Structure formats: structure tokens, C-alpha cells
Length: 223
Image (tube, rainbow, N blue to C red; front, side, top):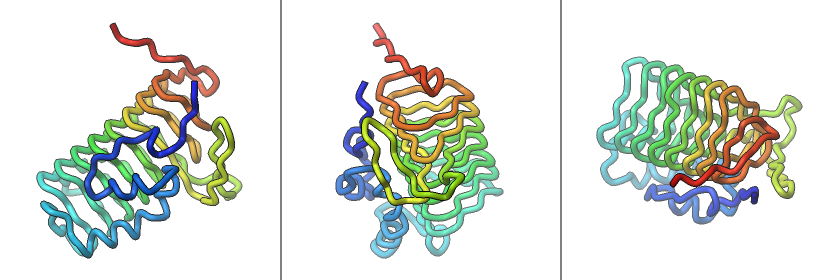
């Protein structure tokens, strides 16, 4: 089972205002320091169909924002996205279409592609979530090592990122169970599911089921 970590192996980005960023970043964590500048550029040029909610915040059509949501600039919220009560957007956040940003969940310096579901009590910091990725209630993308050192992505080889803060790198269709902890720099492959209450570390292949950190089995093809 190959532990793939390149952007092209993890994501099929169809968000028009993010395609260039994904196509020019060999590895997904390379995008994290660029999010703020990407938003700044988009704020200057504007995005067709988006309106300025307040200075530094663009929202698309049919975005639902509960009364108790907090949005700190800069941020771009894609068409049809729902921000549920108590959601806290801390800045440097970009989403695609049809996402759910859940109740009492916190987001900072992250990208959510289309139809990402983070519905309940999640922390999504310095992370990239692919199309239709899902995080169960109470799952956390931990983004800082206890020793404060730069994060190393540990796959088939080790990747020195030079970044102190990297959360979860969740590929398209990744499904994280309730109460999981995604340790800094963890990569979850396409269409891989994770059992609840799992502590995740390292790189997990695509099309698998993660029953525990060291118990990973291929997903059986549906007949």
C-alpha cells in the first residue's frame, strides 16, 4: 500500500480560485504559508458571484451564517456553505462550495475543498481537507508538536517541512471517526476511513480502513 503525499495524488481541486495554488504546489503543506497571500490577491481582484460581508471577508451565493458565528478576516466562504451556531473562523480560511462548518468548531489557516463536512466540535488548524472529506464529532487536527519543533511528514520516506504548524492533510473522501486526534502532519489518503477514538500519526494509504494506528486494512471493493 503506497503512502502517497503529493498534492496531485491526494486532491482533485475544481475550485476555480484555488486551482492554481494546488497545481503549483508539489506537496500540500507547501500551500499553508501561502493562504494569506492568496486571499489578499482574491480580495483585490474579487470573485464572480461573491460579495463582501465585511472588510476582508468574501462570501458566495446562498451561504448560511448563524447569528452566533464569528468570522475574522481574511476569509473566503464558498457558495452554499453553512456556518452553524458557534463556529469560529479565525482568519486565513478558504472554502469551496457546499461545506458545513459546524457548531462550536474552530478554523484557522486552512483550506476546505467542495462539500467538506466538519459538523460538530472540531478544530481545523493549518490543515487541508479534500472534496467530501468528513470529520466526526469531536475530532481534532492537532497542529503543533509538544516540543515546538518543525513537523516532519513520516511516510515511505521522511519529508522535512520546515513548518512548526501543520495539522491534518485529508485527501478527497477521507472520513474521520468521532473523537479522533490527527497528530501534526498526518496524511490520510483518498477514500480512507478511520475508526472512532483513533490517534493518528504518519501517512495512511488511499482506499483503506484504519482500525488503529498500526492496524490498516485495504477497503474491500463494493459489488
